[in-house]
Image (tube, rainbow, N blue to C red; front, top):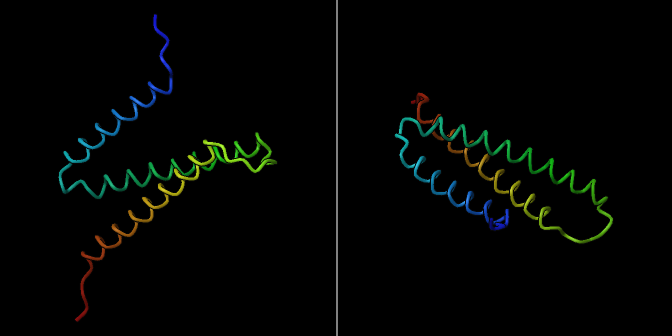
Amino acid sequence: MHNVDPSLINFIIFILAIFIGYFVVWAVTPALHTPLMSVTNAISGIIIIGSLTLLCLENNINNNTSDKLDFSIVLGYIATVIASINIFGGFVVTQRMLSMYKKKNK
């Protein structure tokens, strides 16, 4: 049996998840966009919790005595920033959508 690098398998799963996610999101009817956005905000919140947890664990394991940047620390910061942008953007879009249903004072 051939030995396959686990990172290659993870990369293939990541690419498949991108394609499946793309087609699932584009197949959603417009009436379900708001609930879908709420779910993606919740997933982004979980990503932030996970990335911050991993960053704290990485800093505790390495005691952060050296000034080197590990690849996992950089990925943790990138994941936290991107998920934060996604959550903030979701709240802004939700606020705009809710303001469309408010009665306007004349």
